[in-house]
Image 1 (cartoon, helix red, strand yellow):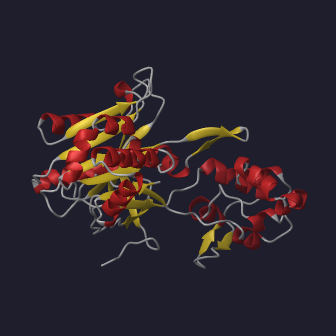
Image 2 (spheres, one colour):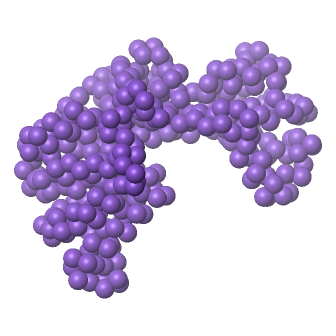
Image 3 (cartoon, helix red, strand yellow):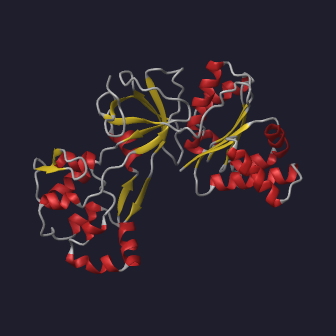
Length: 369
């Protein structure tokens, strides 16, 4: 039996790709279904899939032209020691976004950047490897030495949005695309661009592997209630959680806090969640930040329902937070602290200890990025 892992990824292919945002949205968020029928991979809700994307062909061709190479030249991958054509190495094995310091040192005109950390940081924020190789004369080194200075392609991780009990032969993902203009040209999020724009349904091989997440699991006790907080694509694992709980016929209560920009355009999996709400299986609270003059986010709704949140915590509920680490997770955690302090009549330090204990008992679980 073949074991698929990071070093031997499974050759998955796309079965479906559906844009979830309605016309008029400022976002492009896709529901993807990947074929894992021959992988023999076993996963649980809360786990992720690691995917190795491919670089856009236009960027690879631009670099080959700058190097005056056909792409058929053979190079040795400095990490695996495997031999590939230069084109395949640039397409599938190379991080073409990051310029390494050893690579920078091969360009005499940019020598000052190797010694000035701030200037180098500024340069690297606005330039990628394509910019470097197309804007500077080719360095006087061998092709093999040049490829040895290129960073490796790293996997991108996506929370699984399905329960294997529900879809045994496939994996669902929720992926938002990203693009911005930087350094005078459009730049895309590599993983999302590959999956949502580049990969052809049923054709393109998507090297994938199972990435377990032992710290973000549905409770074994089916009577345990869940408070799930996940704005944007952070809602992905909760679709899997709820599919699993339905299959388990779990008796514990379920409460979901979802947030996005506008209800009319950006309510991912709306039919699924509202059907569960109408059936009494899910309590659903949504914060659509642009639907009113004053922006409302999930932490505001959590504070609004402080009394019920505290009652659920007292009743043994598990709390899950998934999504943005820089702002949302911090704001939500701070709000939970305030609720614990206010409703539990605890001092600031006592509330911190209470939150700390929730985490130690694995009743407050985070999957943030």
